[in-house]
Amino acid sequence: MRVLLFTGKGGVGKTTAAAGTAAMAARRGLKTLVLSTDAAHSLSDALAVPAGPEPVEVEGGLSVQQVDAQRRFERSWAEVREYLLAVLDTVGVDAVAAEELTVLPGAEEVLALLEVRDQVRSGRWDLVVVDCAPTAETLRLLALPDALGWYVERVFPIERRVVRSLRPVLGRVAGVPMPRDRVFDAMARLHEDLAEVRTILTDGAATVRLVLTPEAVVVAEARRMLTSLSLFGYRVDAVVANRVFPAGGADAWRAGWVAAQSRQLAEVVDSFAPLPVLRTPYRPAEPVGVDELADLAELTYEGVDPFALPVGPAPLDVERSGDEFVLTLTLPFAERDDTQLVRSGDELVVTVGSYRRVLALPSALRRCTVVGATLREGRLRVRFEPDPDLWMGL
Image (tube, rainbow, N blue to C red; front, top):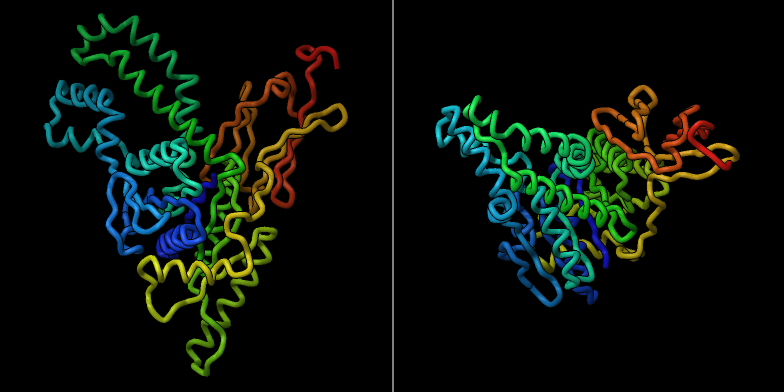
């Protein structure tokens, strides 16, 4: 069972890459599902087939799905939404405005990820291909399990106890309904669901493919994306360079594009090594439909097995080094000035640019003190020394 996630800057052709890979896989005999977490829902347009809230087979072995976020939202968040509507009604918010305010930001992408979880667990597929939202939305989404996990495990139990003990008093004094246990239960269920999603997407069977076009601005964003994906523990197994102009021809305008793209591609190959850089040629017409996309994918993956690309080790590793422990976090392209590291109790808080991850330290490291950290060649190494007051038997 394999899971492939395709992401990249908006407009680089990630939907084309995802749909083409899925169509090619089906023609090679893999039972394949392709679905989208992108609110634009352009997947069915690219394949030129209808798509619905349940998987629909469009040809032998290939199924496509367009997640019905509203239906899943109502099923998963009915209790929370009912409570929020009651609060807004109590304080005099207009009913129409209240409906808008109770829409969960990013709900469509979140619920699409839960659908990925459900489809993976179903055992129906050899391959699940996910057409993700553009990079910024994807990063916020993939960071959500960690962020919500921190809240549910630390703040949530305290809030629940406080609300339960003060509900009768606060309800009468403030006149605002206090959340019932089922509201907290809904939050706990979401936390458990997203934790399972994260487990599925960070094991060796799930990988991300970065789609880019050979342009300086796009390549720069892809570098940042790789750094952030590694920060949150996701593995990337390839870079797909899309819309590459073929060499040849006497046209000066085209020759200029070929030269500019060649320089960018050389930089991509060098800077993203050891990741393979796959190239998709620019076609004279837009590839639409299962046949066109499958043929385009064959050109992209020419000479390589697209479903057996090497998957590197997990971005996070802990090892013993003499009397110390060393926690290593792979952070390609991370700069020292943009990286911050803070030890907070049993957690290590790592910030790179605008993204932050709170790492729960293993039991052994909780009984250690941080004695040093270095960031060299895309690897953050944090050294821990056992605290003699907490560590026995070394």
